[in-house]
Amino acid sequence: MPDKESTKSGEDLASAASAPVASIAPVASAPTAPILVSTTATAVCPQCHLPVLPEYYFCPNCGTNLRLPPLRTTIGAQVMIYLFSAALPWIAYLAITKWPGPRYMRSEDPRARAIGWVALGILVISSIVAIWLTTVWINQQISSALNDVGNIGNFGSGL
Image (cartoon, rainbow, N blue to C red; front, side, top):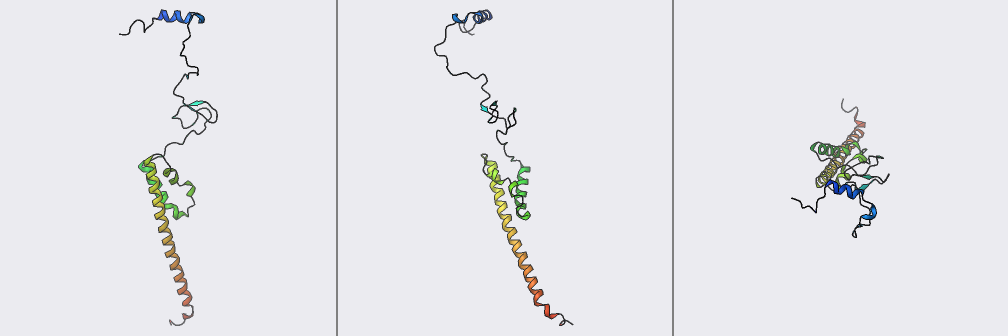
């Protein structure tokens, strides 16, 4: 049960609020810095300088991107990243700027970082396989062309 000195009735508060300012004694340990009314707004938008909540990804006033959303680490996202990594060498690296591997490798999330490194491994292995198969195909084409050149003079010998 609270004691009488620590609680004030509504009448006491009303009389204190209506009292002249001169009659209220200042507190010696009053802070000199302004007190924030809301402690939830700790971040400030770099564009419009209005306070925003730390969990916001975009400023609600001007729409400025405040931070990147977290990377997806679901099974579906992993499958898409791994398939993209495997297919990238086969499309001649035309979409290399869209490959999400570097973003995942630089992430603070250890799961996202692991996904990025696995995607890089798949990309390297797929690149080696693509180079090897291309080399084999080129060698077969050269051998076939040389055989055709070597058989130019033998048109009538088979009759």
